[in-house]
Length: 261
Image (cartoon, rainbow, N blue to C red; front, side, top):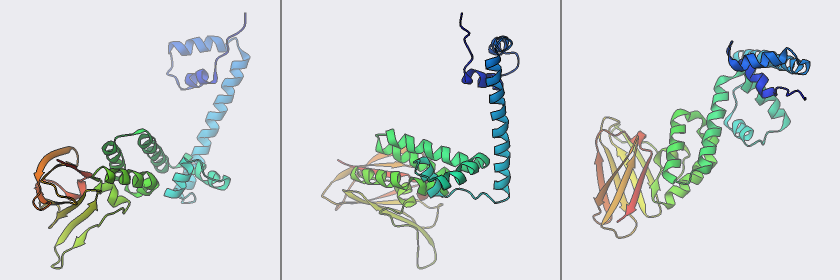
């Protein structure tokens, strides 16, 4: 009768398992009679020690500033498997010793995967907006996906203000009034509408949203998304409408969607 050897996966779980588990007892019974699996276990133990030492050395280089944090371009090239050998020799040891860059890479990979399979534009905007809020310095790693999403949103009469600002796409940023009072001003255009956001004296004031239809319309449905979506029907006079919103910060508006009525 042939011996059923333990797989490397099973032996790895054994090394990490809690003492006294049923699976551990079964593997130990097998190891007592199998030199081949003992040899495999020794290999895994050596590999585990080696990786631990490698991580410790990498952490020392990071702490001493000898291994610099990854740039956004390096992260994107690494994710796309477009690095040359010299880049890999720098990036891989750094990721082993730098928790910050490691977690940034994981977060970016996750967003790229989510956006790749997400068909709903508003959901994609929400995914990317959350990433930009959480990782503002890493936004440029997703510039390609961001601009593609913005173009698709604009075609659907959605102005994605937060990601539009992040990627400087069809967007006007903060301005200062002549009298020195701060004014938050943003403008984006979709295929059918021009949309403006104004917050005249900072985050304490009401947000004013201006809507201009590019064709003759009497009514439109406006959906404003900050933390959640809120919709309302507005009347357009001479193609224009002004909406006042209390308790809303301009910088939290992820997108405004306008539908013809």
